[in-house]
Length: 143
Image (cartoon, rainbow, N blue to C red; front, side, top):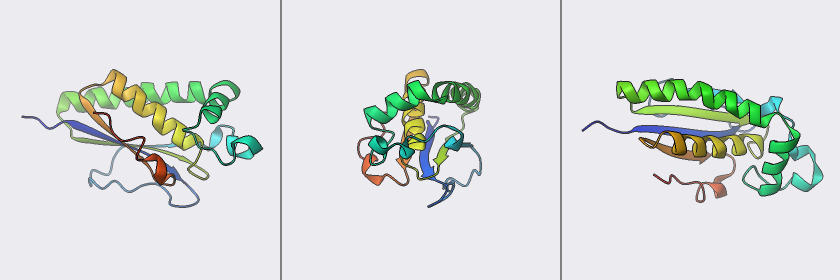
C-alpha cells in the first residue's frame, strides 16, 4: 500500500520565526512571500484580526492583488502535486510568509489548503499557523 502524499502548509512571520524548517528532511517545497500584497494590518479595524477573519478576507479579496497572487500559486503548486502523486512521493511543504504571520500569510495558507483539499482529494493536507497558534485547532486537517 502506497503512503498518502502529505502536504504541510505553513503561515509564518519573516520577522519573528522565519521560514519553517522542513522536518521531513526532503529539503524541498515552496516558500511564497506575501509582503508584496497590501497589508490589512496597517488598517486600524483589522489590526487585531487575522487572515481567518471575514473582514480581513473580504479586504484581501476586494482591495488587493491577492486573488491573482493565489491563482498563480495554485497553478504552480498543482504541477508539483500532480507529479508527486504520480511518482508516489510522501511529502510536500508549502510556506506563506508575511511580516507578522497574522493576515496575508494566514489567509494564503487557509485558501491554499481549501484549494488542495477540493482539487486533490488523494492528498492529506495539514495546516500550521506558526505565529497564530490558536488558529491551528480550527484549521486542523479535514482529511
